[in-house]
Length: 91
Image (cartoon, rainbow, N blue to C red):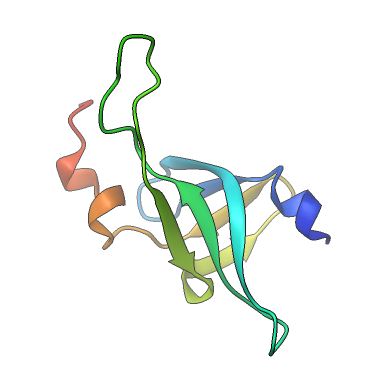
């Protein structure tokens, strides 16, 4: 699988099935030649006038990646505060 193929996959939290979004970038260690983590766009903090609120990017370490499938990447992001279901106000 190529890095360009990874960017097409959705990142999903295995604990609650919530879609975190596509991979925005990879965190690479070029000296050792390993992937240190994946970067996904965080949830929007302010919707703004046209729904384009500012969001921060989050790095999920490679240890959190549980499985890479054909069309999805499963990660364990439940204990991260920015992806916690406890703070989800959409329910």
